[in-house]
Length: 263
Image 1 (cartoon, one colour):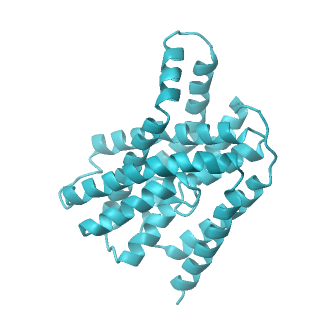
Image 2 (tube, rainbow, N blue to C red; image 1 turned 180 degrees about the vertical axis):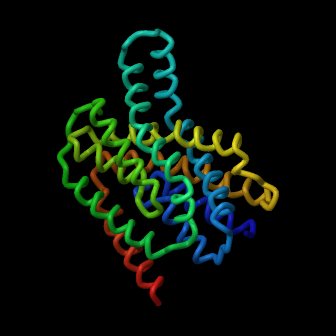
Image 3 (cartoon, helix red, strand yellow; image 1 turned 120 degrees about the vertical axis):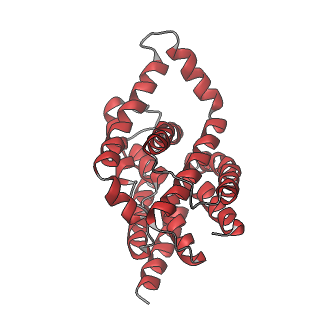
């Protein structure tokens, strides 16, 4: 993979991690277009590095929220911050189970099957369209909601299903406030990403023997910077109920991907 290709893929990751159009799906499409012939393991390494970059951009955007949560936790009381943290932990369980039990099957999907990605993008479009029709409320995410949203996040591990799209849409369809749904969606993925990277480092899955570290660094930087802009923009879009725009986009890209795969 050349340096400019890493930068392009990094920008794609940074934008699509927060915009509800599936970052993993677009990365697979981008690799196919750019002619990246990496084996699934090498492809997954680059994908994990880019996800790590966007996780850091999430921490920067929500630094005040995270600080308030930490302050609340240090009070050692069953306060709002502690409850929010418990909900985040609960939402992580489904994805953690799927990641452990079906890790090899998931890795195999990250190998350029653009027909599959196209089909999943269309499913994402349906979720976004339904969520955009939901009425705004002031309801907070409950513990039961957190578990259901966590299941949506686990399903979104498939390339082509937007993680932010699936979790925000599910939360909104459950009757939660759109701004609170976006905040919960973006914060709930951070522990999973860091946990996944820690696991891979300890197990040796992220070996860099055949990888250009400069290329990884450029991709990381591109994903981090573009992620800062996309996260801020997405919060505004969710508040203004503009998810249907992305539903149309996902349908178009999904159909094109399916057609191209059979051409």
